[in-house]
Image (cartoon, rainbow, N blue to C red; front, side, top):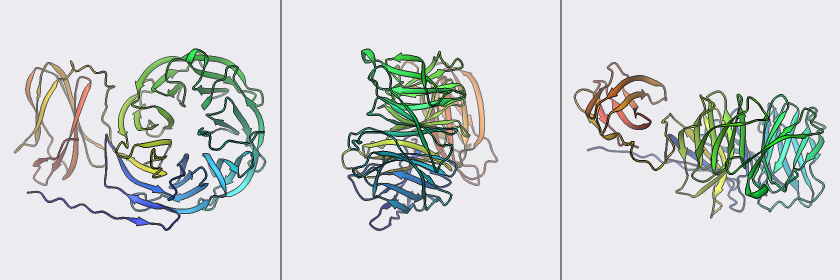
Length: 455
C-alpha cells in the first residue's frame, strides 16, 4: 500500500491581489507553479517583462503592477501599483522600463521609468506617440521593442509603427511613423543588425500574410527594402536569433536570413492554436511561444524541436505575452470567459523531443514498457526493426547516463540501468527512430527501481 500526502498552502495579499500556489499540473515537462491576480476580472494581463526576480505587469485599465517574484514557489507579492493610467505594452532594458500608457481622455504616450530601485519605478521621460485619440478598448495588442537607442512601438489594430529615439531617456524623441502601402495590420517587429527591421503583418493582398523588411539605417527615414508573402506563419509573433528569423501564427516558421533580403524557409511547426508572442533565451537556447505555452529547443537554430508544452486547457487560458527570468517563465494572460488570473508562472523542467503529429501511425515501433525488478532496468518490445537510444536524467534535469543501443530487431529487449546512482527520482527517455517515450523511476539505496506512473 502506498500513502500519498498532498500539502496545500494558500495565501492572500489583501484587496490588491492574490497569489495562488498550485500543485504541479504538468502537461509536457512544463508545470504551473502559481498564478497572481489583482482581483479585477475586467482587466487582462496584457504584457509582462521581468528583471532579477521582479515582474512588471501591464493590466490595461488596471494600470501597472510590480511584483516581487524572487521566490515564486513560495510567494508573489505586489510591491507597487499605478492604476491611474491605462497600460498595455512593456519592455525592459537595463534599468529602464518602457510602457505604453493612456491617461483618461488623453492620447497615448511612451513612458520611460527608471527601475534602478526595482520596487519604485520613477517616471523620467515621456513622448506622445500618436496624434489621435486612442481607442483603448478596441482589442488590439500593444508591443514595444528596443535595439540600441531605438525603440519601436506597434499596435496590432493599426496599420503603422512608430520609431522613437531613447538615447536620452529623460527626453525621448519621436522620429517617424511608418505605414505600409497595403492596409496591413502591423503586429510585431524584430531587429536584425546592423540595419534591418522585420515586421509581421496579419492582413495583406489576396489574404496573404506579409513580412516587411525595412532598412532603418536612418531611423528617421525607414525604407522598405523588400517584402515576403506567405499563407501562414509570418503574421504575429516574430524574433531573430543568430542569422535566423522565427515567425509565428497558425504555424511556427524558421527562415535563414544570412541574406537579409532573401529569407529561406528552413522549418515549420503547426500550432494547436496560434503564436501570439515569442521570447528567445539565448543562454539556454530556448524559444517560448504563447498563447498556449510551447517550449522549443533551438540548439540547431534552423530547426524547431518542441520539448515542452502547457496548454492550460482546464482553465481555457489565453496567454498574451511571455518572458523568462531566473529559471521561470512568466506569462501575462487571462481565463477567456471568466477574466480570471493575470499572471501565470511556469517552470520548464527537462527535455523530451516531440515530433509534429502528422497523423501517421505507421512508425509506432514501441509496443510496451515495464520495469524489470531485481536488476534495475526496463524491458520493452519492438514491433519492427528500429534504432534505439536512451538517456537518464536526475531530478535537477541533468543527464546522469545515456547509451545508444543501435539497430535492434523486432521483439523484447532489456535496458540495464547503471549502478552507483544516487538515490532519488530519475526520468528515463527511450527513443526509437524519431519517436520517444519517458518514464519516471525511483532508485533506493539498494539500487532497486520502483516504477512511477508514466506521464
